[in-house]
Image (cartoon, rainbow over all chains, first blue to last red; front, side, top):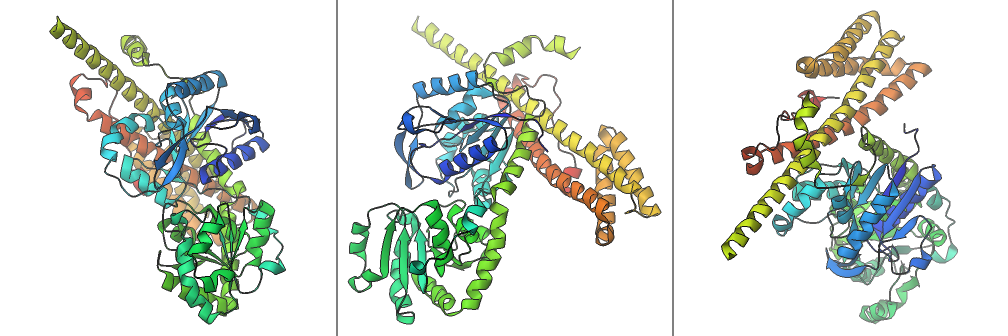
Length: 394
Length: 167
């Protein structure tokens, strides 16, 4: 057990003001650590310095680049590098926790600039890319400075071993399970209903698969309704939907955390038809914690989160006919829904911050052994050692 | 003149690369030392808990003797015998836990709980250590490192056999 209170620097590679899984994870982790008595400073790119919480330090305005099938808001360049060095130099940290250090952003810069105990967390899961042959030699010397590596899922770990030939400890993303478990079932969302949360305009979130499945579902369950929550312009999307089915969709816009909890305990089924690009599936963990019966595509991250179908139903990714079959089957069988939801709720406790943070802290504990805290790296160090090697050896 | 400039630039680049590789290797050696120190501490703790279990009511006289022997061996073993001693301790603990668990009283449960927490930590420490060792070995195999003897007199780090089959 870690008894000493640490001074921890966390680096978030993506713009703090844009929503995203990594940002949420960093925010929750930082807040959990602060509540447990540690001192935390988060370095992140940010558009607006005014609105940042007091534990976040802005590294500058993020730049948008296309990455891994989406737009990533990252930050690099000489000014950012100077900013990172200054943050490390003045921070006096016991440990740095870098998120996504293999992405061209400030985490990688921090990994270059710092010396001492460092832990890296890898979130992304991607297929092996050819380009790794070119960028591997640049990344390798940086990544090998990390004292310990964490991957958020088995899929992320495989990506890491494939790309950089290094292993990692799997620690899942965290959720505040209690916040979701006390949701109140709302009449307006109950009945033969299907829920979906996410940025539905992005193709990889797979709402289109659900739209394609609906004609078949509606034939067997005439009163079915689909509630779509999440930011985005629903006008454009509605045009694409068959006019006869348009009134079965209701777009709720962005909903609050409290509403999310109610939403999860109200809907009959929560459907996650994502077609890829998902590494962990935090939304599924939240749905399970909220007591929803989950139907998800069988992409690797979801498959492992749902224990191969034990804690939620799976269907073949991008196959809307099979999705329809699974949904109809479950809508008709209430006891099966209840069984899956109950198993899922127990499963979700594994992702609670109390459990996850404990694991992360034990990694921290291993990383700081023998270290004298984080300092700026200097390239002259090896020469110093080389020249004084004989003296040291005596 | 121009040739001379190019030549000296290449020399400088070469020196920088050597220095860079040396720093990199130095850091890796340091990482291996740290991760081993980590693992070593955890293994010592395990031996201590094993002794405690051996002296509790959980162990019958025979397994108590076995466990005490294995724990002392693991604690005192030198580098060469360390691997065998740790494997032996894993085996002895495994035997005892397999049939001791059902009828353990509360304080013994706590002891076993402590052991299982420690075991999962050891597992993580092992994976961190083997990773550090394999990265170091990879860099040590590089051409420049061999030719310019950048590793100096530092021994090539190796993983212990018990690490792959432990626990």
